[in-house]
Length: 255
Image (tube, rainbow, N blue to C red; front, side, top):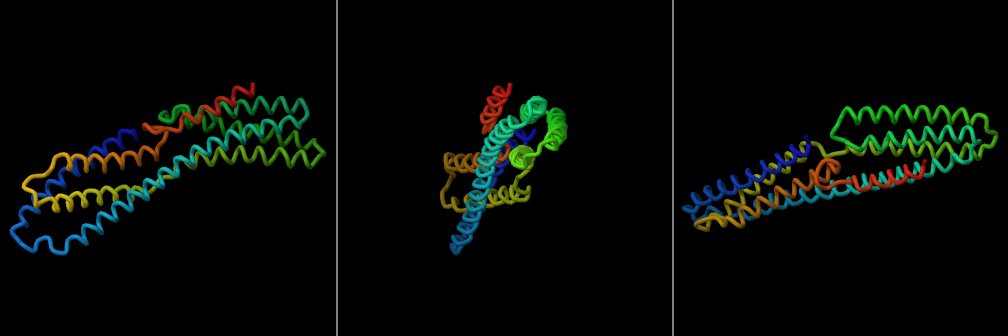
């Protein structure tokens, strides 16, 4: 649904840009009768275009940074799970074997969480399985560590498991980090206003260059679509799914 909404937003912006360029050109043609019609307008045009470019740049930079951060979180979770699993070797065989079984169930739930993000019911079920696995792991680990007399052992295992749980929650919250809707609405408004002013500036020509008009609209709308694609990297063309393979590879080593 979000992919369709992003595509429709970009398409609407493309059409709106074409319309604004044409309307601005017609307004400019009407104003050509006034010799001073364009006096002092360069500063206004520059300010609007500069503001649009600035907001576009900041929005793109933020989306790219969040995309990279989500990829880094996958790597961090894989490392955290691997470390916690290895630390279980320090426990007694009975407790170690039970916890390893629970750990594998936990990893399976984490894999299922991101296997099909378009299926909300499946995601909710996987998240519930994750919480149940966390509770079971913590309960069994606590019971096993209470029987231990070595504080160094407790200090080694507990932080590793806590880190594994924390990074899972961090990844969930990271998927919800997006700019407010008002930012995208303001960006769209600036694109349309800039198109209107650009069309007005083209009024000295008897006809508009179709190449420049279409290229201007296509570049702006595709840039905004790219930003939206980066914001939702599991739904569009730009994806982080390839990094999930690291978690799948780790799961094969846990058997």
